[in-house]
Length: 370
Image 1 (cartoon, helix red, strand yellow):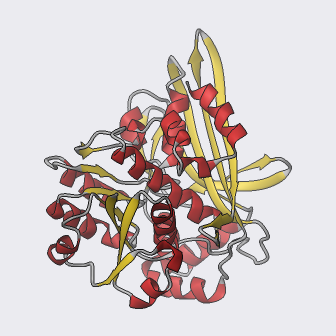
Image 2: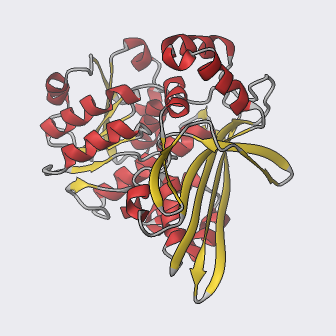
């Protein structure tokens, strides 16, 4: 049985614990600075817990010393500290961060590491990159690669057309930080909440706009190989305009703790959500201009006897699948591992990756990806 540490006992961390411990293949230690959060874990997981501060990499490394891998589910501003501790402890490192600056530090830590460093293992970045790369490999010449992801309430009932479904800090960060993209063949940064577009899917209208971090390392991988590459977050129409007013006109992008307090006390959370994944790739194939698209929806469902939101399931199952693939020797065991290095077929065949879509969609997409 592999020993794994999960740092962070929040919405995503607790779901990771349920999945890994529930599989019977992992002995899980959960570390969080909040004893209250640890006490709220599902007792069925039978995970070990440790309440301790995680800002000190040296102290954290001692708690991680006998672990095969560390799954970092802590807030994005603690990413580099947990990564440093994992390296000191000699453990494999995985995280879920969408924060571009933190991921660059993780990449530097991986350069001389004797273990694997695999950041950005969630939904976006994470699975969205794996799916896009699988489609992109079908083309002789790439023109446009468009990635769209949204975690949305199924029953929106406020002016924002939104409910809190995951980390408030993470939402604010991706709405505020610059976004990587390739535009007309050139790698550049584009502003968040801009380039808003509308599209319809099965009769429902959505908007999508620039947000930070969703591409992972795909910009670097496809630099010089694609005309346009971008990532945008899906919301219901009207959301971007209100958020721009809050962040720009009222200046709350410079008062993030206040914005977090406002959102968490005014916007209800929900478990009744849907995750929409929409990837479109176009280019030349056998002398013809072609397009391939992958669309999927994932809904809330029970995990280990508790209903988990769709964003919890998609984020947690993705990183758990990568842990499994690492343990099975299907991924390199040292250095920096990109999401593009993870095979889609292996991912979807994994016991955790199977949470990602119904079996008929797995089969259809796997056939198209091979």
